[in-house]
Length: 319
Image (cartoon, rainbow, N blue to C red; front, side, top):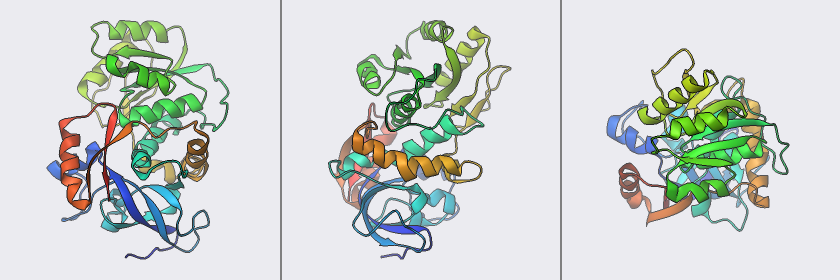
């Protein structure tokens, strides 16, 4: 078992989830600084050891962690292993009623959603409240509301008192509404651009969160802004060179919420919001986990399933 350094904890993993970035790195080698390497950003488990300076956790706590091995370039900080070393600033406790499989869907999606929604250089929304958020009168468009990041972004934006307009396939309309979306449109509809622009024109529209980041979503968002003749911040989960006078998507870096000048975001989200909001039910572990196997030997199958595409679920492996 590894040891916890200053500001770190060791976690015994009981569930991990697969993200698109995992199979993309495996397939294309992007972001790797060494080979072989251990991947994985999402883990849920029990605290085994607490390092110096860590006061929020003790041995035996049930936690989730956004594993930051890609940032540190240290495989000990990645999720797909029995014991991992996490920075305490990206760890939160989870309630006893929540299974590790449920909780494992949240970490990377939460940090990614927060980086786009709360960074002043992006959408700059007010931080979310765990109880009765004050209505800001503002609206945002979240493209891809049924995705892992989209599901989390809808909940967070709603908890910030912002009205959410989103897109999803018709089969997932009720799902995204249950998370707090005010209005949802079928992203495949030939009139989706006109319909979204029409409803946004009647609101105090302050930004776009693209939880898909593909050409189809970026083109649609650009067309919406052209129709509105308006430039607002656009946060995207994937980098893009598509830029116009009114459309300039900015790539979201999830780890930025624990780095200057955004440490206050990570401190609020991971230090307070997640644990309290999960406990009182105002924040839900969504989308639901789809457990595809047990044990580290099942990780590859999970990545393959994720690569083939899923809808309104997140692929999870129990350990």
